[in-house]
Image (cartoon, rainbow over all chains, first blue to last red; front, side, top):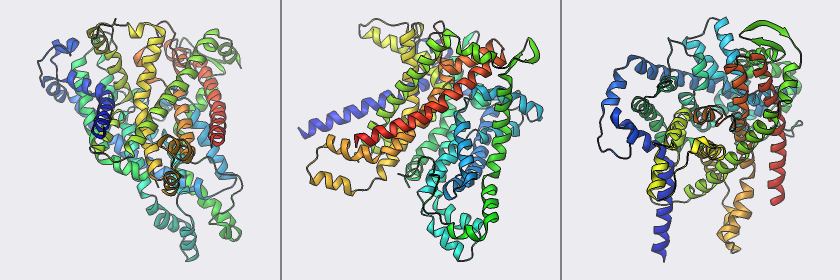
Length: 265
Length: 315
């Protein structure tokens, strides 16, 4: 009876895992098939690595990987820097300024991206940052401000404020109390958000599509360019997608523990 | 669980700076402004300004073929609100999508979080596998699922036919296409709920569970009367945040069906996109987007109230 239940449990878990992983497994399998075989992925047995070789020889794709990694990392660092302070302010202070800021964040989080991306294109062109790293990086930082400030506020709410008060009484400046007392306590949450922010930026598509010209290709846009009028170049697209999964997989593998611990507080 | 708490009450009972405020009034305001300055500046430049440009465009005849930008007042708003397609198809589609996909991902995410919260052999591996959709770019996931549900070459039909069922032209019928969209969205966003709810479950105090087991409560009763009420706030906030996002879903629908067959699976974001980018009528597209923003703003607040009340009553 016990054994039967355990077997049933294992079977159910296995089935759920299989269903969850299936699209990814299918993607990997497709990437290993030669160009002639991608339409019958399930039938052929011929496997090859030529797609990966072709992708890695393409300079634009390699450049896109470098760009994506750079943008994701820098966007993570900067968006955490600006949202930590803004979340701290929302959590620790009351009054008109705080309420206004919270209202602004809520309202702007509701505005759909669609009403935002096209004017953003005009704006970046007008300021001369279109198709540059700055023009790609700054909007990617801005896009997370509302959501992350909200989350950060929650984290700081969970941390007792009396320690900072004690630091203040001991003659610490407000800034000192924030940097030396509150910030270290919020470190697990910051680590969790860093992992999520990196993944979000790495996988972001709509903004990258609008803001990317010739000079700054990023990985999601390059992948989407395999889908065109003539059909989809499945073998190359899937190989690029599998390569793009790599860093995200590593980050999730080693970062999940910090995410769960950080969101817990 | 204090991770995602609702807006601060207007009058705070305890503030660590209460004493300090009386002495240095102006200094505190300066510090507050300093803390939000970088975020506010970035938001102003890359979010507020573009959105204001969009809002301005929504009151004008602003199109590629007519660059005069004549002020027309509320004309576009009246047109969009009077469009039967918008009222009878796009809005119901959007709300249905929001309800089903958020509900589905929430239930599935909660079930998986409960599963991962108990120790068993291979728990770490299972957890990594279940977080997999988080690693895949939504566009790629959508392209991949479109491929799997392809009526000629897709694996889904191959398997169905192998099992003796009839293959379906999934993306060419309204409701099957809608189901594929919802399925993709649920697949993509379940890990997000799993992560947050798992973190929530692990932070719960132990005592109520011990008390429940002493009282002889079964598994279901423990879940229903102890776990669920304790997770209340996090469930509500997760669901509301996700619902706002679901309302403006664009990329996966665009990639999977493009709103088709016909315009039968069009969600509100696509409706605005079609005006702004395909018909190149930027004014009307912006008006549609502004209306959508207004709707979700109100719905978000209502949803928050209702869900909070609902869980409160059930306790």
